[in-house]
Image 1 (tube, rainbow, N blue to C red):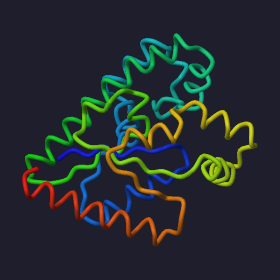
Image 2 (tube, rainbow, N blue to C red):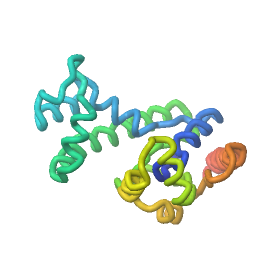
Image 3 (cartoon, helix red, strand yellow):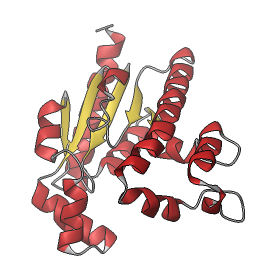
Image 4 (cartoon, rainbow, N blue to C red):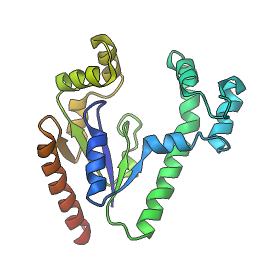
Length: 202
């Protein structure tokens, strides 16, 4: 069974992902794959160089992510071109990895996709877990974690679908606004239920 894992920025999705991994879930992480598919020599790497130029390359031939980011951040057309290269490559690799895990007999595969709803990737998974905390706590955590001003943090949060909307769309919600122990308890219960469902063939 492929389960999507998503949430809002600074809601604690990575924490929950690690908890699921500790309990034996196989994690297919979109962020990790997004870095792998643009590594030197990869097809997407070559397409990015063809599109945006060799001046993006560092000495070790890796793409200067900061330079590329600033190039596309203010230019919608450039960002769409970049997404048109990277997103299909990420989806393809995620599918391949999930398929390999299924063939190896893994019962629950967690597809960790930060922008699952924004990128309309619901079709990749059978159920969706949303890691949730209220927006005011999200704002507070993001400012603390990244050293953002309030305005910077608000802009980052507003660039994503509101967390309340994600919460409504999820099949399961892990409320990460309490203690780490409370989150652990929810994750343990949910993972046991997913395994049970899978074993019953539902």
